[in-house]
Length: 386
Ligand SMILES: Cc1cc2nc3c(=O)[nH]c(=O)nc-3n(C[C@H](O)[C@H](O)[C@H](O)COP(=O)(O)OP(=O)(O)OC[C@H]3O[C@@H](n4cnc5c(N)ncnc54)[C@H](O)[C@@H]3O)c2cc1C
Image 1 (spheres, rainbow, N blue to C red):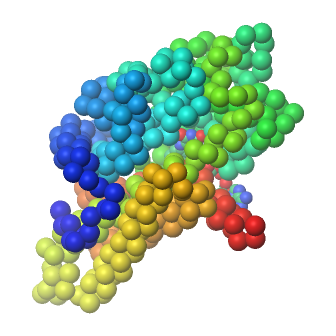
Image 2: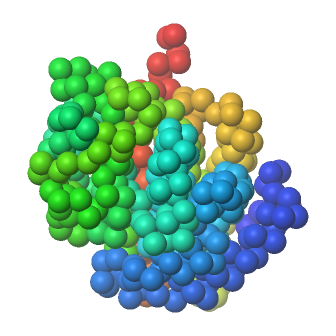
């Protein structure tokens, strides 16, 4: 496929990461990519996709070796995620597992909790999920109604969650619950629930307009009892912990958006070069060249922006507002660019056999999850009148 930014290499890439990139490309292209279409049909990946990916060393890349991880950092996670997407193997919810769930264990877990849960996540034996959203509240996280009420040495959890990624496969769920329902944000805690716990139940694997191979579910908790030792960090600190971790999640979504823009542009260039109309290549129409020039420019701006965000994130300097800018702008651009690319495919773009049609459907959720783009603008605007 055409390399659209001929002379550009992300400034944070080094020799070691390039070696990792080659290995990840080979793994995802040969081991997962070929199954994606079947997984879309069945609504989820095969369970052994997790253990295969773990065995190949592509889960929990940024977790320390003592907890089963690869001892890398966020750059390693980025390289792996990019190659997974380039291979068209997005069905495996490893971004949620490795880059969102695992960091909560690392950053807020006790030594015992880390030893207990992280090594099995690294092998893929345990699949992680995080359950914030509920049927009645998504953007307004302070309004969660799921409760975790202390009873002796246990929490008793009651409530329901929805739209939870990895919901069918998960073995461990970080549940955002009110340990003090009289409080708003200050009453929220993060409680780990193992899927084998009585009272935990999975709901339907929800049918979605896109991302069909990624399982997304309702989860129910009915008098679900877990030890008080399953609270991550201090009771009542859950909201603060979420706010600390969400910038990485948002950067991750923005980075995925950029990879998808680049893929869409590259596959469209290949298409318009071979497709003919009115005796010439579709590529030769001025409209095509100008549209693709615009797409390339915007994708390049997005790429350099997320690269800069990554460098700041590595230095511990990525603030919530900048991460929100990256998330909202890159995902909006992803949707616009993929729409333009689909149009340049003509009718073929509407056909499932052309990947651009799937990319169009998959892209739509990017401006919704991880905090909607409206919420991103809300967060950015708070810095304007501080
Ligand atoms: C495929 C998929 C996977 C997901 N995975 C997970 C997961 O793993 N874990 C999890 O916890 N959640 C997950 N979600 C849920 C997702 O994070 C929420 O859908 C999202 O945060 C929006 O919440 P909501 O659906 O309740 O929308 P609402 O909050 O009801 O928003 C509805 C509309 O109102 C707007 N709105 C709300 N508040 C404001 C405001 N203050 N100002 C302006 N506009 C506002 C929103 O932007 C939106 O346009 C997933 C969702 C999907 C679709």
